Amino acid sequence: EVQLVQSRAEIKKPGESLKISCKTSGFTFITYWIAWVRQMPGKGLEWMGIIYPGDSDTRYSPSFQGQVTISADKSIDTAYLQWSSLKASDTAMYYCVRLQQLVSDVTSYFFDYWGQGTLVTVSS
Amino acid sequence: QSVLTQPPSASGTPGQRVTISCSGSSSNIGGNTVNWYQQLPGTAPKLLIYSNNQRPSGVPDRLSGSKSGTSGSLAISGLQSEDEADYYCAAWDDSLNGYVFGTGTKVTV
Image (tube, rainbow over all chains, first blue to last red):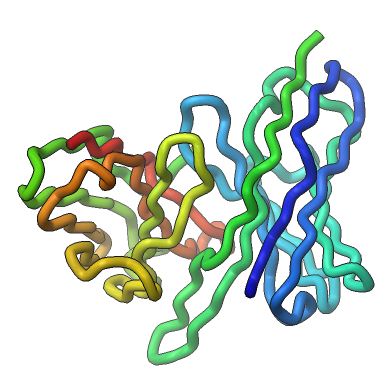
């Protein structure tokens, strides 16, 4: 059974650092892209970036480039999202997701499995 | 910032049919497939439709998807109270070289 289990909710102060995790199981971690998706309170879904744990190839949405760091540890099948200096505007739910690619006449890309989400609250 | 546009809300009575539109461009829906996600209140989103019109195992056939040009649509037939949720379209974007979501549609039954 495919599972993405995220770390617990966090309450932090502005300026603090944070690293949240996404422990995966039930599939070969190094052969799938893993992405992070943000959902601010009462708002929609935003793609932040993606990593291929097999070779650590990482890409970011322009909106998040330089704001966060995505990494992975293939020895423990876990992906990470980290901040070096949190802001109040980082308050949101963060989801890790597995990217599925289906190749036919057109390649389809979609997120087939989602983690349960990690709520990050940044407040002084 | 979302690059796929959806109506903010849609509603219907039990048993009715509701359709949600998703408007994109040549760099996303026009050149790639459309996917749909359902987010029930207080839960993580779930894949509902992939590759324009394919349903994952467990998704009832009263939900269907389609694509035409740079737009996609999701239809819910035989509307039920359990369909009350937020629905998001999404697609790969070749210009962004990343994934884009729609603005989201809240369905009320």
